[in-house]
Amino acid sequence: MDTLALRPWSPADLPLLHAANTPEMTAHLNGPESEEEILARHERYLWLQRDGEARMFAIVDESGTPLGSIGRWKVEGSAGPSWETGWFVLPAAQGRRVAARALSLLVAEAREHHEGRRLLLAFPAVDNPASNAVCRRGGFELVGVATERFRGADLTVNEWALDLTAPPRAT
Image (cartoon, rainbow, N blue to C red):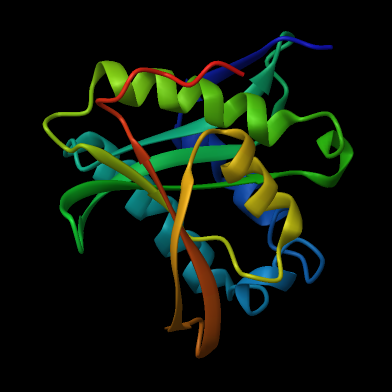
């Protein structure tokens, strides 16, 4: 199994967002974004990271090849100040537990730098079995279901939570 690392998001990572903006990759997110939305998201990743509001990463293999993205950003959840996480893995890297291994790296980083925010939240679509399995295997607890407007349409998501201050669960 290849070695993974999380590399801080950089201006050179815009092509990664374009590669993930396909109908197949966005099927559980109400479809692809426009070019303007992709550019705005890339800029948002950069300034949120620069301002300390987020930690965004490219998931890379041992050769430095980007396989996807993962990050965490500050939110005000129902339980107070929290972090939210989200990820994607490009099709060529799927089926190799890349998302689960990247989430494990992100959780370790978040436990070390949680900044008083106790929870890490994830909101995969209810009809996305792969991302929901990543949450379950990552030690998250399913705490609810919600329907929200996302990209112009309703999206029903599972709400998963992980207590960053609790001892890591043995896997």
